[in-house]
Length: 536
Image (tube, rainbow, N blue to C red; front, side, top):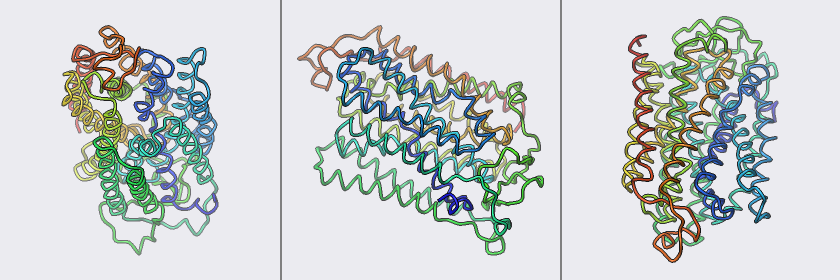
């Protein structure tokens, strides 16, 4: 299998899309957290901490970047495969153990390892894509990240079908293990055949345009399914039909991109979207070898791809952390990611805060996942367009996402149903856009040679933002105004159980989300000032 696929970057991209479809499973936490909370009698602080540690692990790993820069992607996929045992253990805990001694500690540990597994996969994918698509890295990353953003919605289709958290957890465990094993087999660092050392190019703009069109159809089907499941009691046949449509759309997109091929130079018309790839190395170009998608650490190349404005310097990790831009990005990232996760992790509880019923929870999780996907697609397309057409750096696009997140936090702070709906849409869009923007931005500002190590190091301080916003800030003000549910009551009619912890109204969210909004706006001013001072 490795021998068959080693020469084609589009088949490598096919594997990347499959892996990314399982790299956003933290968005499913909003669906299953209620089961943990009810089954093991956890309070909101404990439940939030479990979700926070899962996300925390996804940013704890300088070693992951160093491994990639030294050995390539294959060890990272095997690492993800090793950590995926935590998915099976979580399923076993929920299915077979009703009263563990320390349920919070067990779930926190298991979710930490799950987050670490997804970090291994995500770094392997992102580090590869920015190198094999030098001029289309925004769209390549955007489409892959969109599948990560859609993973929550894709998994919720299984939940609609089975109506069982246990079955959902088992299918996630099997799926994540399988795609990482497949990717580990597909990725290959062998020397390419001599016949592939010809200069090739392909119209990536057309390919990604068609793939983006397919994503629009997939999003429409997922949104229709979510709305129907939320508004009606659908029969099994209808749920199977909707799930089949989702699978067909997903399969069509990944199959289409995976079966593309790069044509010989003389057979393709050149346009502004053409992505040139050469198999020659060590010749002063950073366009990655078509048959060597992992970019061995022994390749000494200069950062001068057509899409990167002729950058000639690769920053080492030590050089990067001595720049002001590195720390501006770190502070902004920990703020915007922490703010987004404050809503993502606690979305199931926010549904009750604004007075909605339990059955709305799945719809809101799906809505968040869909607009997360839309944000990733939009950022990928727009950042490439403005950068290639007008030479507007992606740092300006990053500043725009900070402003959007600030506005979203203000809306959620109103504690109203409309505010939560619009806030969820905007948080999903901004949160997704950030993760599409960052890989190309880092590669353009700091170079490709030590890209993975710089990216992983930049992510480490995000842990403080996750703990501060998602774990401490929200839980503190929620618990301060919460109460214990007693049945019969209105809360029980909305889906809560006897003994559950709940909080209702604006007072539960006003202070925490306004603090988050102010922090995001300050970071927006910081990045904007840096852009203006430096000049575009």
